[in-house]
Length: 323
Image (cartoon, rainbow, N blue to C red):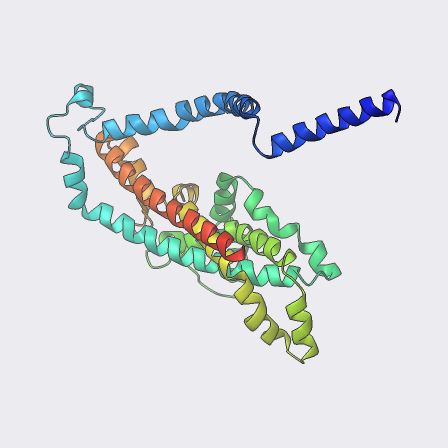
């Protein structure tokens, strides 16, 4: 063996030794450098998040313990009775009504969005030329700005300018606009919100269907299973975890419904469409009760945190089950 061969073999042995040492975690200096590099990259993002989220949340928490009213700014640092706002919200019937309206809106819209998203996703999954052509059109409501969606439905619900009401007049139907009818105002919001956000659940379900193994379906088809049996006994059980996660995400997001209510009903008629976040808006910007609205916001934030924890548990549980 020549000297060159010996040197090459020695170099290969050294490279392999370094590789095995790195895989075995025997280079703590390298690991420390890599962690410092990661933290260095994350530092700007964490700083921005702290400024944008943590500091306002901390200020909101502090303000919730004061009776701050913009008509009397001197109360900004009055901590003589820090729980006064939280005692007030326990007896605030209008707030309790807003939570009940929020619950009805959230539950009904989430159920409808899951239902329509599932049906449309199953149709699009057929991959026919017609379904492929319509695939992109179903995404339009979700990508529109929420304020634009609200204006679209404002036009549709306004008899003087609505094409739907012109059709009703031609048919001789005397239909009252739902956004001014206390019996139908919340239903009008539900219809608009479902139309806007069912594409979100549709996309998630379509992604799950794309990763669905075909072996079970093919075996069932060989055994003579119908399309309804395939959907009920194979597809839906496979999508159970996906539907749960999509529903929880939409449940959290439904708590933030604001533009539709602000543009369409302004919380009315009366308070039939006044959800919790709109009630907070009214207390802050109409009545200037900043301290009280901050306390209600903290309660709402706690509810969102609990729902987020449920989502994390559901996702991690689903991942562990798949493993």
